[in-house]
Length: 240
Image (cartoon, rainbow, N blue to C red):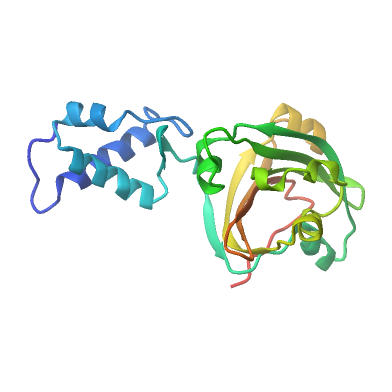
């Protein structure tokens, strides 16, 4: 219960700090909804306005994600390094610049509901699903990357294309869009059983996870991708 402001710090900031601590303590888990506004009002004896200001503050910090009609969720941030990209290039182009040859094998393509963070970024309606493409990528015929791509339903029909081809070439050819700006995050993960099998590494091997949130040349959400890479086969450089 928060009865009064301490010093000059507003109550909504105190509430935001409590929610952040509960996230750190795993009481509110990544990808899961937190209690409703009404529940928080009753627990802390605060006004609706104060609760909403606290939730907005955390949403602005990308700690929470609010989905209209569904609730407020904890963002899946992890321990990430973030960078804002003004120009997005494909992984294919990055490998070519290193003088290597890349090839791709499609693992699966399907429609999925998606996580709250994905649905929010791609601006999905309640009844819409994402297109999920999963691929294994090779450098000089050695597997080095497992890749997931999530596309909004406006790209329906792409599953009939040759998905072993570079994604941006397909989107430009079939839908007349190209990548423009977005956000890129990096963090260390550890190989799951499936990833260890696909990448030919031991389970729990440290891998680099790169996640892209990309807007197209019309400033509309284009796709989200996640790549899990063997760092012994590929090094990613950020230009400033």
